[in-house]
Image (tube, rainbow, N blue to C red):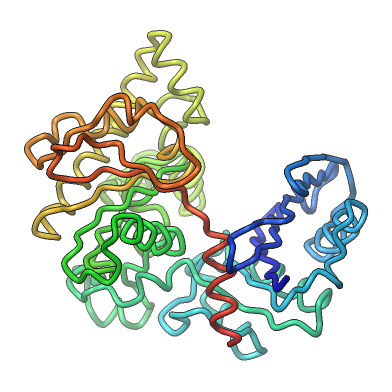
Length: 396
């Protein structure tokens, strides 16, 4: 077997997966949590059997070694498992790193340089790359960037209407995020519908999880996306509120005395679903709505209003829409959200089939009626497989 070890290093976690890029099979996967804190844990699934143990992981290097030894204890020896490379999810590539790239000192320095654009993510990604390089010195390390899919957005979509000289000096533009997912899902949707390579296929992809984003894709290439310079813009998310009048932040600075740090915390950690309802998980929000909680209902209505607005806007950008696709944790699993999100959009030709919407399937499936002018899909995302495929293509 030729496999790729896919790593996603977060500030306090290390997700890993051993993926066959041809079959998509994940022989082993898991996560080390609470990296850098007491009470670290590692969860591992091998051939469908899951286990969790407590351990010590003071840094990402220790987490990488913990991953190796735990997998070995479960019968997966990474040294003899046919690994051809290590693929890394890196959140931000800036303006220069716009495609999957084999990591050398120069590339690592550039990832570090643009970390100011993603200060919560890139430093952890760098730690993961360094740890993996030390653990697997004979394997190529490949960085796959969340921003790469959106790097060639049309200028009218990527350019903010602020002072051009200032924007150019500080690399301010719409970068977009969740790009690996949007690329994978839009390609899977086209393949599923037998329209691969169709330059006229107009898609709206809704990646709805704790983080959420939308994209407009024409002929396999994105023409707009909801996230911007950072992942704060766009849809309502778990702890991020998405679109907001910048004047609100200036007002809070002037009248409430909030510092830049305070505003950063507000926007990243105390807004969105949590900020309005006090509930941090979408499943708990749905339960509260079912129980008649007024704040929860308002929160969901705000979430749905923003979502519908983006669907309508992207239908206008595309000049019509052929396919609307739901993906990621909430998009794939919430029957009620999908139904409510598309209410009132019948004028676009969207018709949901209630029975199909409630159905279950491990792969892509249609949830619209046969008479619907717009095909509505649920397509499971698989960023690890996408990263593995990009990694193999890059080293080839």
